[in-house]
View 1 (cartoon, one colour):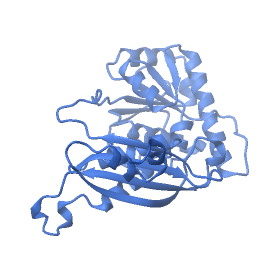
View 2 (spheres, helix red, strand yellow):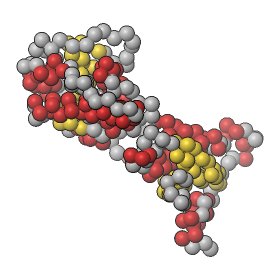
View 3 (cartoon, helix red, strand yellow):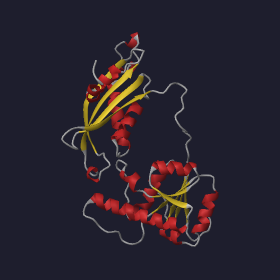
View 4 (spheres, rainbow, N blue to C red):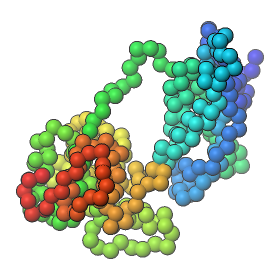
Length: 307
């Protein structure tokens, strides 16, 4: 029998066999599947790709006798590589642990899958391979995993004129009285942002300019709290907090994220509203839209007192 140490450095199939369940299961495996991807929490890992290796074993219910050599009646290898591709395409990730968990979760959506062993390694970060390995099992029927209640926020885009308006506190009073949670977006201040030669550096500068404006707005009313992560946003919506979105993290962690240039501030806010599943979008001091959106859009002037 292999030791736990040897299992740790062997293919996930070794761990699968060593921890077999009482009911015999079949296994399918993917070995040394290498993808170039941008991933990582360090600044040196941004704006560049690195090789990531995937080794996956999926324990599946035994195939029925009437499979008849039909690929539609089994869990195809394509489902494993597809789970990897979808997880990589959803957003830019910092952690291999997050990526592994998402790959395993998607694999376990398949009806035949029972357990998934996922090992992911970075091949270019040092003299050896750096990685993680996880095991996930399908939850039993009838289990509940957290609160899946969908919350649809109201998203409001405040122009610079609106932020400086004497009506601001009255608008926030109205937003606070509404049952729907409120997420506020802003653009950059009017002052010209510094210019950098590197596109990634310039994008960060533009996002930070927006965040400066978010803090300026939050300083006008203590009910407005600057937030930057999806976890904070989810908590804020569930607890009736008025949030002002600081976009750097979510935008930079998104594959092919939207522009943060000054003239694109409204498009950035609309992208955010779409991503958050907004029920309604209100924009101050903006023109008309030329495209359809999955929520109603209302335009207001900062000279009016009604939100």
